[in-house]
Length: 189
Image (cartoon, rainbow, N blue to C red; front, side, top):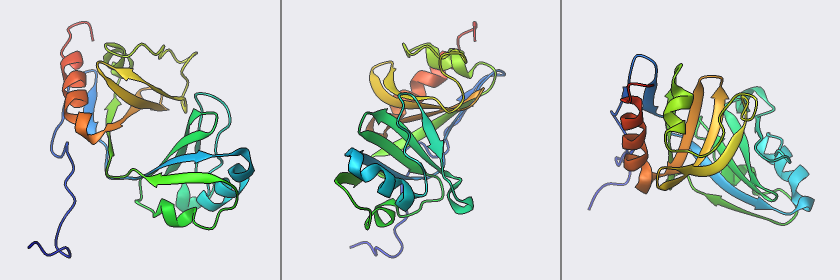
């Protein structure tokens, strides 16, 4: 039997990189993730507990409000649904344990993984298989959406003008990464 004290997490995309002169594709670092559903009576309490104001408008995200939570983002996925990502690996379940109101929080840290697509051609590479309009006017920095890329569902976040975070289930991550790598090989990119 394996010693649980020495077991190290396995990340599905470890060591993979792809891209071209115009785009870089690499796995994101480990992060804590929380799938959050909440009724209106819990939004203020959860925002305070998680130290990130839960956005209320479609396609928006918010960064942590405290210095120690700047690596935390809340992504609006629906009228009562958010994906919380903390790149420092904070215990998000513990953070919302004492929040009031009616809500459901599920730790999806091991279900999801992410790919970072950056560079001048990042938008074009993702657009090769994503129907979302990624123009800066329609999808500005901080915009997020649950959408499709190729044959898989993703949550897409524009972190900077030329940097995107592609969140997907880890079981689809090899496909998503290969899709992006192939799109980067297109001579038009």
